[in-house]
Length: 488
Image 1: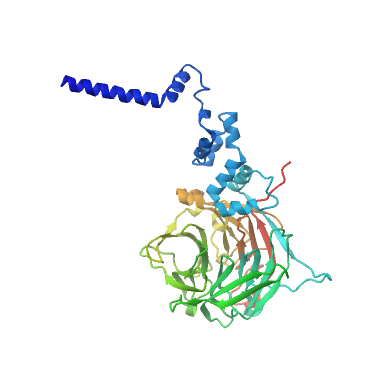
Image 2: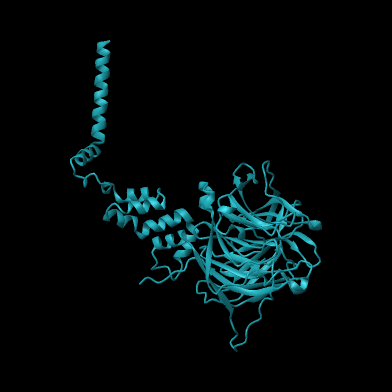
């Protein structure tokens, strides 16, 4: 037995010796540190590329604390390359690549940009003017309208449909090119009329350089459930813009007719719709997904069937894709005509079939913990994913049909972390403050830095039984989320 113990002790001693030789630099630094020599034990001995990778695993607060240790580490922790990588990590590559293409951003530090977005407390609004013809005459403009669609595709704002004075629907399509050298002036061009048929309360999303449109209500009150695709073409030589609409070839299954529903694009591949007003004025609570072929020649509608709780039926709410297979639903008007402020998350899990597995989950929060939370419930608002992976909520109206002009930010990151008390933040608006409005059109650019808004219903209290009380707006403005200032 003693010989076995001796062999075991020898084996253990050999293992310890190998371990000491393997980690001898660490042992040496530990020893020297105990003797008061902290320089050799410093984390600066780690290669810079390794430190770079480690920092990208830390939250921003820890990175800023890390920078306080010494000058070398501060230089690394404040480097522009590191903060560009942090922006890509937290915001995604598309917004960062789009911001890098900005003519005004080449001298703007990424760290300052990140912190400005992180501490967002205000936005800047600018009214967009209409360009004049060479002879100085203002061009023909879209008539004032509400419940229309506004999308940004291939550098162009595309406006379609909506309702206008007299309770009439619009069947026109307008396009305004903004591009990279946008001078805060719009040159609206009317490029189509009659196709698709006139409607308001429809939905329209962008897939690559095409538009997908579904449903809506015409001025006879008829609900639609047709699906259209529009392809936009920019002609470089002539400078003209064309947009061709056609009915999308789908299978026999389609969502029931509706208007005032919510929709969004999912991963630039699919269309998701929820709720709305169906036949006989019934508010709906179903969810449908349109799966599109790669060439966008045909599509297939499928209803999302979930076993767990779902959002109550509603209309005038919003759906916003926040990345991956996740979508946020907010607000709207319920079956009892009440205006809502609840938040729901639609989450999809990939599976072998095309539809996947989907579930709705309500994101609970205490309204009294929200700053000025009594202003939060709304219908007919816009909800856009802006830079920093946050939702910017604008406008809408309350249960008394009083329109709003406020801006709110919903922090998606706090939802993921479960810190529901800090989900909401109200931000101030600077510049040319727009009128209070609801049922306007809104869309953001690829960077998430600019929100474009057009039209809507404005001014005073609307009486539902008095059509003459409806006031429609025809103005356009841009909301700048991050105001870049030239460095001194």
